[in-house]
Amino acid sequence: MSTVADKLRVDMIECRGHGVCAEVAPELVALDEWGYPILADGAVPANLTRHARRAVTLCPRLALTLTPTGRSR
Ligand code: SF4
Image (cartoon, rainbow, N blue to C red):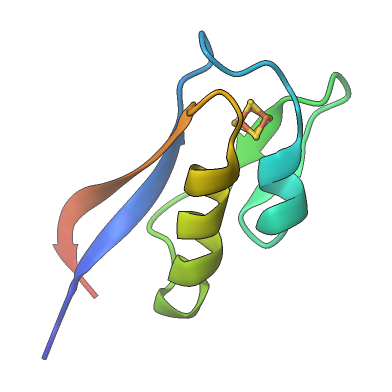
């Protein structure tokens, strides 16, 4: 059974550079020199979906979303 691949996105207007996302999902998020997130390109690999969801939940600004890419994995 295939599932739809999700992509992690950040609302840079809401983001305040707390860096929680990079702590929770270091495989998917790096921080720039000011502490703002640089997200990995492409769909979140299936084995990292839990980390991505956790980062979305724990972001203090609710600036992260996990949205379907429209492609199956
Ligand atoms: S946890 Fe949220 S507010 Fe903090 S850097 Fe990540 S996206 Fe921005």
